[in-house]
Length: 193
Picture 1 (tube, rainbow, N blue to C red):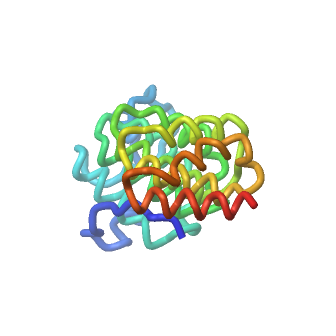
Picture 2: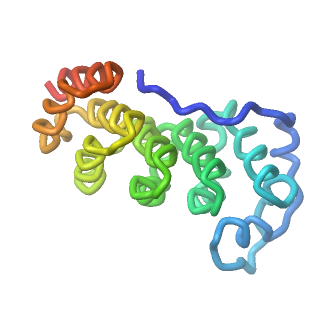
Picture 3: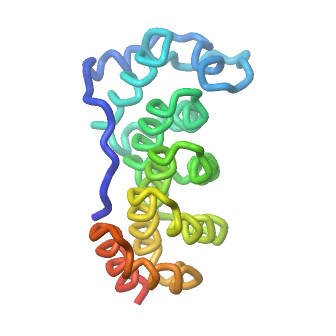
């Protein structure tokens, strides 16, 4: 099992998220154009409110699918913690999160290592490989952050034989300074077969 990046503890009851009022506030906070349609508002305005609301979705797992469009937009939030929480929630959707793959894959190029790591994990949890994603994950096996390398290797292992183009890069990780990265690389290589 991959190492799931942990988010902030849930502080509000689930009813806080499910009983949300309607407004267009999320569009402005997630750097997307304002919507003329009304959409769920996640918590009170501000980073903390968005973070708390997204983390409240964690226990729902795949049942949080109705929030997929909002979570997808939040992957572009200006705050890295909020982006990481959104990626964590999307990964917990499993295959139900397929529609978010392009947005999650975009976060593999985020300037914040924690966001890249969460994106790699989420892609493995969603479990639908694509050539572009596999290529980018292979590049991330050289990332300076060990958590990024570890989660990228884990995801490539989940993708199995589709990850054959990353074989040489995974073999190089068997000599990585981090024992966890070496362990994930070995697991990925056995998953590729």
